[in-house]
Image 1 (cartoon, one colour):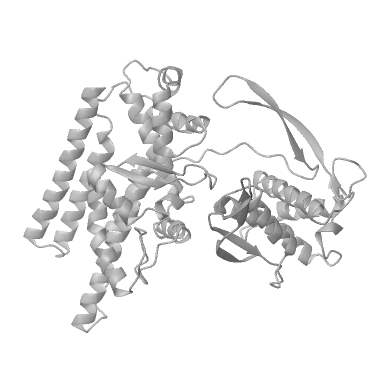
Image 2: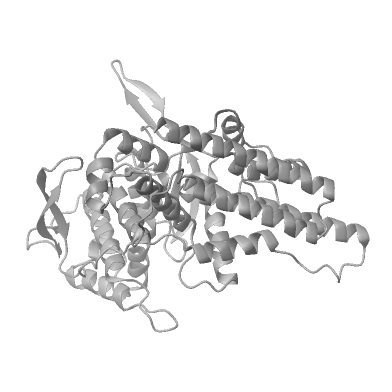
Length: 476
C-alpha cells in the first residue's frame, strides 16, 4: 500500500568535467509498505530508480506505485510467500487470476481485462528490477529455466509524424489477459454540464435553525464565498480545458498576467522534468471576470487563516491550495448529488473544450465537407498542429484524432457554415452570467446598483470577446 507521499525529495547528480554535484528538481515520491506498514525495500528502491535513472514525473511514478501495490499485497497475503524472489509461473498466474476475479459489491468485475493486463505489465517491469537489485539468476526472463518465464511479441507501429513504420518488441506473460479495445471517453454532455452549472450557481442551505443574526450573516457569507469559488473552478474547467493537475497549479500571478495579455500560463503535465513544461492558452474576458469575482473571496480566506502562497484556487477551510485530488473528488461529488449517470471528472470538460475547438475549426473552414478533407487541409498543416498542441499540451499529434472523430460525430447532419463560430462558448457563458445575476437579485443578494454594476462588467467582457472574434475573422 502507499502509506505516505514524501514531499520535495531532492536527488543529486554529478555532471561535467571535472565532475560537479548538482541538486535536481525536488519531486514527490510515494512511500510503499506492506499492509502491516513494514516498508517494502524493493518497491521504494524502484521508486528511486524511476525518479533518478528514468527521470519520470511524480504523477507517472505514482501511477507505477498504484499498480505495484497489488503485488505487494499479494505477497503479504500468501502463507507460502514472504519475498518477491519466491514467485514462480504458478504463483504469478494466481496473482493475475485474483485480479481478474475481484468483484464489486454488486457482483460486477472490479477491473477490465485491459486494467488487469496493465497492472501485470507494470509488475513484470518491477520484478525485472528486483532481479537486478538482488542479482538473482534464473528468476525472470525469456528462458524456460527461469522461475517466471516471459514471452516476446513483435508488433508493427507507425512512426509519429510520418508514414514510416517500425517493429517493436513487447515482453509479456501467458497469464496476462488480452487487452480490450480502447474506450473513447466522450466529453461531458451539454445537458449534464448545464445541470451541474445550475447546481453550482444556485446551491444554498437553509439558515432557519440559526437564531443569532451575526452567525446567520456569517453562514450566508460562507455560502456566497463557496458559490463564487465553485463558479471559478467550473469556468476554468470549461474554458481552459486543462488537465486537473494543470488547473490546480494555476497561480494568482498567472491570472494577473492573463489580465494584461489575454493569455494564461499553464504548467503542462505529462512532461519530463527537464522538458519545457509551460504553455500559454488564450482566455476570454468573461473567464477573467469570473476569476475576478472570486479573487476577493480568496483574499479574505487567506487573510483569515494567514495563508501565504501563490496558487489561485484554495480551500475555504484553511486558505491552503485546493489539491488536485480534492478537485477530482469535488467534481465527482457534483455528479453524485445530481444522480448523473456515469463517471463525472474534470477530464470530461477537457474533452469537451477541445471537441468544441475542433467543431469551430470545421465550421469556419468553408471548403471542408468531410472528415478526410479536414485531415488533409487542416490537420496536416504545421500552423494548425502547433496551435492545437500549444493550446492542449498534447505531445503526440495523433492524440488529436480522437477530438476530430468526436467533432464529426457532434456535427453529423450540419450543413450550414457559421461565421465567428468561436463565439458560441462565449455567448453561452454570457447567458449563464445574466441568469446568475438574476438569481442573486431574486435571493436579495444584490441591490439594483450592484446588479447593474455586475451586468455592465459582464457586458464589457462580452464586448471585448466579440471584438476579438471579429478581428480574427477579418484576419482569416
